[in-house]
Image 1 (cartoon, rainbow, N blue to C red):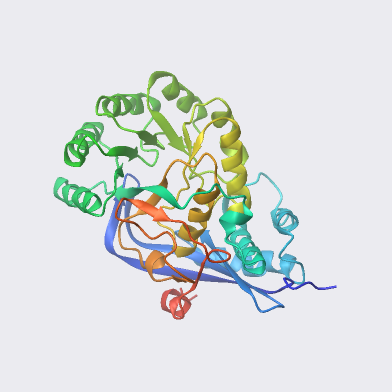
Image 2 (tube, rainbow, N blue to C red):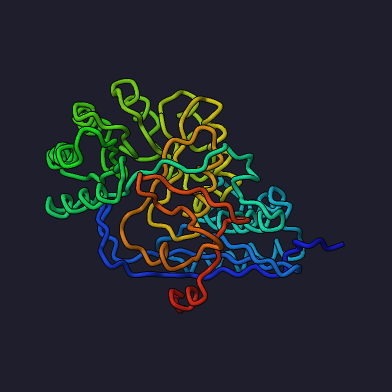
Length: 377
């Protein structure tokens, strides 16, 4: 017998947006971004939405969801999130990760959106809630660019009220160390600063950069090494008195479980649009809480659905530390969704974000968004 959340249709949409200002990291320049958006429509008429991190190749992500995952979901109850997660996981054999889990992430978030709508509750309350009315946030990210652009971006972040700022760092090492000093000088001593290198270094150079960061009183050191270099992370943790952060490259809780358990990481940063959606991202946050490691959802260059889902996770997690608030113009974040009520994740004058109270994610797709950003085959 079908229930009110019986799944009638699953549709994935590949989207692309060109950025007004090219974003620059240690891995190169990014003039455009891609994602896939998942819609799950039910027999009751409710529609849930989710997002897949697919910065390149969104057409392939959408095709995989439409062709391989959707048939496993049609006719089943959207309430059965764990059963559906397992069914999707079994689509492919082999080690769990990669594109499969990123696609599952979009579907899973849409299922949580439906659950919240059906219960008339925001997702953070379904997760248990933590009694927060606002969440702390950091400005992300100051580009790995020329000094003048960096100065302007730091000034802009400070003018918006941010008391926490993250800067992108790359190679060569002497320039990176100079950038660490420059941003501290520009931001002032009262601002908490983090660095994200997008795994630009080996352990030896990361130690040198980390020592310079410690000298300047930096707060956290994000992805200094390749995600798979767990021995390197242990080495850095033994020699640097700074919070090491990682996890945006993880697909499941197992990927960094040893580093969390051993306190080689001080901050775990899963991306809900990559790490299996809300279900697996919550597992990662809870595992970190058990071991006394803080949690900060990764948002990065995602769209508005990922941002909204991340706010709910931040609002609910007992070990939440800070939220990545992207400060550059990104049409997929700013024009993809509209809030049901209020302003989901709206920045306040004191550099904090509001916790939403609308059911589900609290956002819906903008009326013209899918056609405006759709990638043609």
